[in-house]
Length: 620
Image (cartoon, rainbow, N blue to C red; front, side):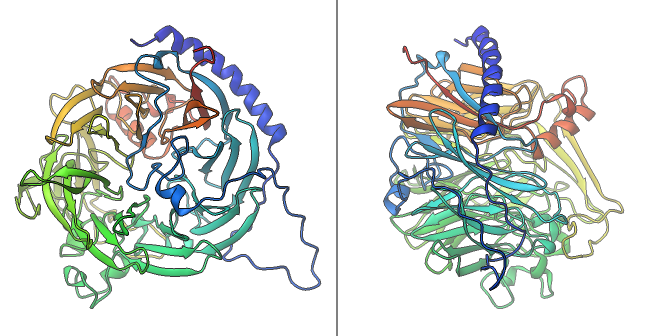
């Protein structure tokens, strides 16, 4: 049962503790180094001002991160974006269960000082938490004593004043040896000393003035820091690139839009469209260490209207397989060709075993796509990907047919928008699920999806878009149209769904009558699914088997951050960042304007970032 009185009581206690934690943070956090918005770090000129002394080492017993730690992390650590390379978002900790989760309470909170959207997971190595945020003017990384909330060091990096404001957020850090890596929004990769927060080196990934920016958590494999790019709405050419963890040297770069003569170029026009074809890569990929293969999701094409770039347009709206040593594309699967819907498919599929068409258990990939289809694919040791099954998990009207052997879809009449052509399609351009990650539990063998049901779009491209470096490159303005609306008879939007991998069937659904859902999910061995994402600022725990809400608490703001779980001195904690913003806020604003009787205006949802840590009372 949900302890509703406990929720409100704990919130009051939590806000008091928040003020204490904020004060403590201001007193204890050393001022981190601030670097200029430039490329690789250079030594000072001879005869110049003396260098400032390095920050003091405040984590002297930091455990260097090895390939073994990243591949097989300790149960109490969270060293990857989704804890493990396979992307499950699963914690094997089970101190907190369906039986005692109702007693879960906040133990510390820290105000981040930012009002922009907070989406990064609180990542933990050997009792130290590392959390990143980005704002319209700066980025920061915090090192925190994970059991008490004491801030150990803070690194801040200012952004250039002419940096555009698209999607001011960050989604986490990467680890290797004694270094921490994060991507600054101005497309700079930064390496920090984990013990002190001192900047070790920076390297320019791309030119932010050309529309490139970055906000993903790096994927670190055997000393290679692997990153992607944002900016698909600004006429970029997407890529995945690897840099040396030691000194930032670029090791390889693979473009998601092939140049003429490269494999896949035949799916693009003969002109220069490939140079601005988008295919952004702004969510962290997943990794198969046994076969040494990376799986990375690729976004939609640019400009948005596919009739301005005829052809299937590989490798947009696809998953690609990459060789981590060379960056070579070893295989791919395209979820839908020649996208005109703004259906970014950047979320990498999770790696789990599943039954193939013959009922044999095979290594698989599962992706709850923005296009509203739950894709089940087979991954081969050579990197090739084959189709198993595609099942709509929300209302869709755009699929005329799906080839049972290849999974290729054909579009239904009147659904695909174009230049001067109205398309009426479900799910909406925000998709059945946007970027928030799905989760998997090996205990139930269920996949859990933060879904948005019953939401549709009427879209029409305006005039042909003229490319200008760094400027918006989506739809021409004259004749442009984009209407968000509820499907006829809809009684809700947001959902959390559970799907049985063994049968390919939906097991349960929890509906949110008056909210969309933008909440990343996490599962635990205690039989729980944690997530937020709703406009009531609630953070919830669901029974993983039944979908029953077994705990909930109203936080300071909406929760669009990735939840994590960790252990210190035998005690399990749950952590998450609250901080409403970005696309969740944009959708809420549009829903509130169109349906004020059902959805409250977006301006009524509190903003402001807070890192929360929860645990059971010590006497339990």
